[in-house]
Image (cartoon, rainbow over all chains, first blue to last red; front, side):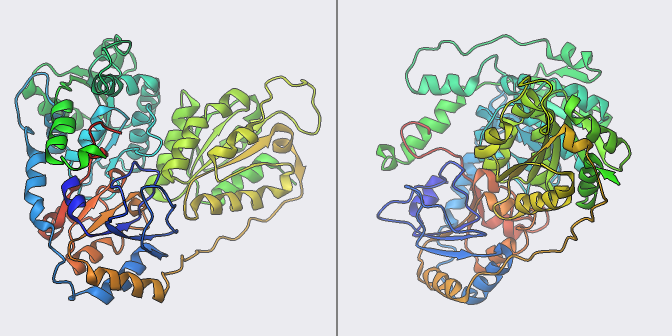
Length: 293
Length: 266
């Protein structure tokens, strides 16, 4: 995606809020940016739009479309990049390595969640993989927090979604670190008789920090921990627990949990060695010019 | 005659609140009693932080503030992370916390923390309620502030003596819809001129595109301009229709990862 941003000469940023990590970096050479939102843009070192359309977003966009519709011969200039981008997203999505890659887990989760189903993420390494690879079809069906980026909100936010939309499939995806920060709410979820599946990606560590430690060439130190037996832990709350032991079991275990209803805790190990290959090495090789920024 | 906590709960019902999440303490007992006699469900959580995350997510998904309740000091401070979550994430939420009596002080400084001050950098508005008669107005204003762009958390502190204070009945403040103004013609003309000159345009859908009120108009803009789009992490899914419209699918490039194109992630 950085490729497309890099080639664009204009970005129409609709509803951008600079609390999110910069999705692109503006510099003296461009790109030009039009900010469309409810309120004027914050001025940042990396975001200082050339023009602003401030007001109710929907109706304002209608009026803007009235002015340009049918007069944009270059509109689809960057569309040709689409295939390459989607190709990279589906890369290794069906690889049968054990423990599974993040790509495979995202792929399998998407298989069991219908278009209107909701996945609520805690914060951890997998957030980047879901943001990158999980395709969404309806607004607010991937609840992730790229603002405070706190750990511990995955389970409570999924519980709220389950209360509001009892007929939709709702899944919390948490790391073992983030889950344990508010795991006591399993009792609340059981007491409220929610239908909810909690998927724990078990790497026995504060994995994202451990990864950053490695990227920064620090020795592996101080970020590993032990875990409870998640199956027994679930059962002690009156929830149902399962541990996925083979790749072929992941989809059937998730599917069975949704079908039977109630609160389910499902633990699966995860192989984070893909982090370095895709998020650092590949990005670097595709974007040599940007690598020095 | 009516008491402060009854006015608070009536004001919340007036706003359409269906549930309150939290962990009550001794200083909230009048409010708990008023809730018992109301249509609002009290949903106990096992930690105040989870209650705040749930209330914030209610705001995020519905556009209407979720409400959570905690006691003074330790309970209120456990709301802090949830308050920051809602504040940075632009999620409307109302936090209600208790406090020792303010008209007398029989327990000296026991458990007293300046919660209003602690909430200042984490909220759009934080107020101590100093008279029962002011409750309907304060609640209405708190909801207005929480929902208004840019949405976020607000906080009201209800001391236990004000919660128990008996006053003459106070009417609720009527609620009316507020429409947000549409962009100025000059701004639209200027933006159109830039778009018409672009050779390689892209649309980016960001966090505010995910607001429940926003989805209207986004897909239409993408379709009518034919410009490819991508999402930030928090803007994912904002152009709907992927299930039955191949057009949107074809024009969606991808959600970007939040990695700076640099040698190391930021």
